[in-house]
Image (cartoon, rainbow, N blue to C red; front, side, top):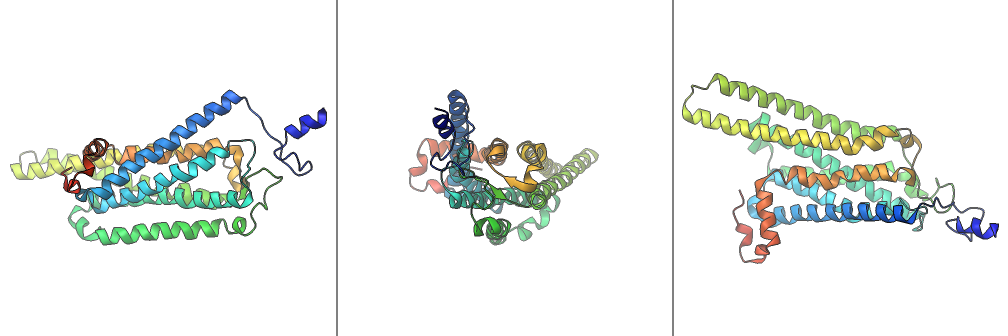
Length: 327
């Protein structure tokens, strides 16, 4: 009887001496976790798909800034479509898909998530140039240059992830302590610097610069209140644009910190040795940033609400719908 009970608690009962033990939890708790995480995954796919279709279909939205939003939406869409579903499996007591799939999952995870983070940095740079150097924006940020930067961004993410996980890719499962685990070994300091400190520092610095410019423009507007009507109109337009960008970047910083701080700050020691299913919930909090990105970068703009209405009502299927006016 004791032997059967012990076998039931193993991930692979046929491997008595090398199988991992199951860490069972109540069925109701498991169902709640599955439903919640699956809903977040589907919502992430749906919201980012709306952004992808909107920017890809409507020609009026084919701008350098929106091309960066499109790249961000693609990376976040892939997070919801591939990374999140596999990550849900890490909440289970046992990993049943094998060592190779485990390593390939983390390889794909690093590529897509890091691409999402770098796209956020590129968007912050784009807004910084648009607000702090508006006269040269059209020459410094062009469609061709943005396409090159997006391509370099994704290429770098693949190259970086390959180097970062090379040892794990070379010998899948070598860091598992038993059969039924999905564990990889990484250099925690490098991960924290590249995926957290560098991007958040860049975004915060750029945001502070944008905020300073917005404040200075507001003061300039008050001091030149008696200027000619045309100058006042231009000042008001610039002020509104800057304040809107400042608010958007401010929300970005707050949400990014809320999603990335838990896994990197609550248990940083875990990143110095191994990543496994033990902190899968904290990692899912990080991944949920991909669900919030379309809300921050797209829902704040009227053109997105108009495009969603055209998509939902199927007007997008009509001839010449790509020429619709959204701005």
